[in-house]
Length: 383
Image 1 (cartoon, rainbow, N blue to C red):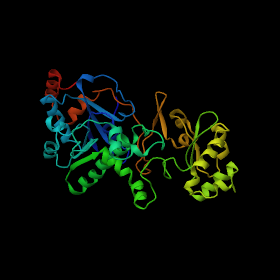
Image 2 (image 1 turned 135 degrees about the vertical axis):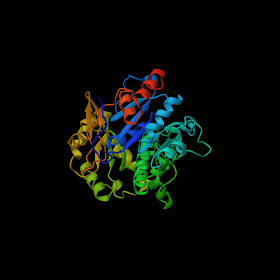
Image 3 (image 1 turned 90 degrees about the horizontal axis):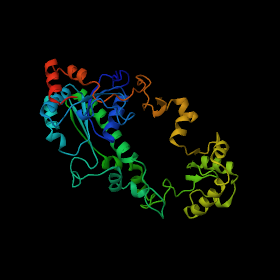
Image 4 (image 1 turned 45 degrees about the vertical axis):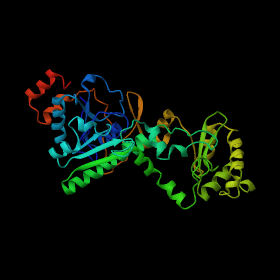
C-alpha cells in the first residue's frame, strides 16, 4: 500500500487536493514531497486505474469520490473538515456549485487554508475564459520576450506559467497561509493566478527597464540571447553549449580558453554595437569542435560554460548524480524533492497510488462510519 510521507518540514500537515491537471497536482506534489499527507480526490470512473502521471502524483493517498453527487460532496466536506489545507484548480465558481466553496468549507473548518490555482485569477474580465500556460504567459508579457529578434516567440515548455507561476506559487502561498493560520487560528483563501505568477517572475526585467537597462523587444538585452556572452552556441556535432560569462572575471577566463585575449573585437564586453560580430565569430569557433570537446576545454576554468544536456543526460550528469538531484522509479529518472532541509529532510519519493487505493481507510479516518462508507459504495459516489 502507498502511504503518505512521514518525514519533512510539513510532516503532520494534512492537505486535500481536488483532482485536476497541471499546476494543481504540481503544488500537491511539492507539499507531499515536503512531508504533508496529501489526499487526492479522484473520479470514481477511474477507480482502480494506475495514475496517468506517475511522478506528478507521487507521495499521495488517493480517494475516489463523485463530487457531483450530493453524498460524494458531503463525504468530501467531512474529509476537508479534517484538513489543514485544500488545493483546487477548477475555474472560478465550480467548487461553489459543488457545495465545496470557501464559505462552506471555512464555516466547517475556520483554520482551513483554501488554495485556488487558475490561469486568470478569481476575478477580472478573463476570469471565466479558458486558457493554457501559453495564453497566460502571453498576456503577462513573458512569451513576447523569448525568442530571436527576427523570428517568432519561442514556447518555453510549460515552465513559466503552469509550474513556476502556478503550482510553485500556490505551494508558497499555501505554506505561508498555514504559518498564519497556526499563529492566528484563522484560515483564508489563497488566490494564485498564473498571470500574476508570471508577472512576479519578471520583477528583475521590469526593474532593469525602469533604469533604462532593458529594451522592450526580443533579443536586444543582456539575458535574452542578444549578448554574445549569454547565449547558446551550436557545436560541430549539432549539440550546444551554454555560455553565461556575465562578470568581467568570467568573461576574461572565457576569452583565455578560446585564445581571444587581446582581440580588439572582444575588448569591450558591453559594446552592444559589436555584439552581432562577436556572436558570429564565436559561433564559428564553437562550430569547429564537438560539444564534449568544448566541455572538456572549459572544465574547471571558471568561465561559466556548460553543455546543454537532454533530459536523460541531465539525470546522469556527475554533479546531479553526486547531489542526488534525480532519483529513479522503475528505472526512469525523476526529480528528487527540493529544496533540501538539513534538520527535517524529506523522505525518498513514493510511487503514485492506484486511483482510489486509500478510499476506505481515509474516509474511516475522517470519521465516516462503516455503514456510511458502505452506503456510499452501494450508491456509487465512492469507488
